[in-house]
Length: 389
Ligand SMILES: Cc1ncc(COP(=O)(O)O)c(C=O)c1O
Image (cartoon, rainbow, N blue to C red):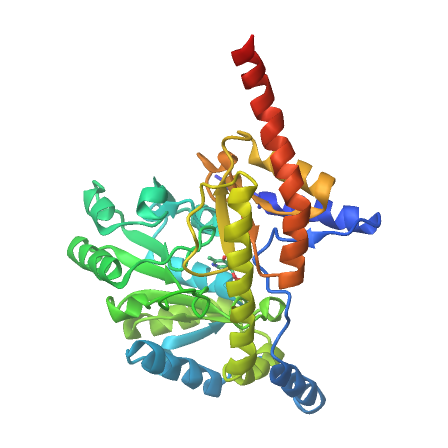
């Protein structure tokens, strides 16, 4: 039996956006969670230097592994050995390694719905069973310890993401500890996707390693470090899984690009430049949180982190893919439909990524405001006509 893996719907929107741009339209890309800022300048300078001097073979940068390990001590007070850090080509292969190290085909792995589309599809590609459970605004779209404790039978695994995609919500430290407790009691192995660490607008997100030392933790240079196309990330594994994870990395992916590993080590300490990006996301977030309700999109959970706003558009449509497409054709603003993140409720949601410049967010707001108002009015009109009739 061939695994049934769904496509990213946002890619269809992105393709249309690029086609329209090719026809001369001015497009604002808010469909993907992709910083527009590029790698830190010092990392780029180092990469230029390395290109001239390094043969660029298969390589594992031990200094980068040690630097990442030190980060866990400094930021989270947990001890990680460099050997526990497996360098990967981004978070995506790290997810494949983590799941294939922990679970045999057929295992049930719980995850929040809505959630990052690739969780469900990577699970399916590995013949694992995604056990998605609905997490609405009351749970701030996150798995809770109580919900996990109530699952019968207990799943073999759990994927958590904090901050999450598409909602940007963070699991509070107390809840994270409670989730870790339930998992310990019920023998559930945890995969914690911490790719949006560094991007938070209140308290910084904690690492699952603070509560569950045997959790497998995924991270990447794609978001905070603004290096998505460099394809570099990592997986932290407990000591007993180092060999299994290394064997899978070697066979499936060999090593991440040598150039990216050189640049990543430098990027790790470019904090001033990276924090400047975070400050611009703070501003973008505020602009959208102010503007969206004025467009009639007032059912949103203010994101604690990442760079997304997930908005309920059920008053306008039950086909958010069509809504995103109309918005793009009419205004040039590309966004992601909720169906990618939630196959059940997502057709009533859409996601705005604010990882673009503040000037572009302002421009997007200027274009979207009259469009959403007109859309709302068009829907309200027949109802009020009917009421008057
Ligand atoms: C929650 C989450 N995990 C993983 C990834 C994959 O990231 P990478 O570019 O590091 O493979 C993404 C990408 O958007 C994401 O949102």
